[in-house]
Amino acid sequence: MKELVTYMVNALVDDNQGVKLSMSEDGGVVRFRLSVSSSDRGKVIGREGRTIKAMRSLLQAAAEKEGKKVFLDIV
Image (cartoon, rainbow, N blue to C red; front, side, top):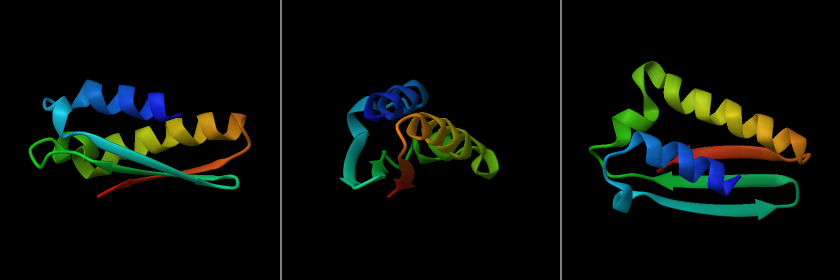
């Protein structure tokens, strides 16, 4: 799943060096903490949050296959 998040975010941002992704797993819960440069934040969030909602939906579908719950936070 980490590769999926990395792929989606790198496709959206201009500054790939500013992307920082950390992952923590506790039982069946996976939590991603994503940090991007301030100039790319709007691209990742999208208008009215549509882009980040779509990313979260894709992650949830991938996590259901593995029987896990997933959260994606932007910090």
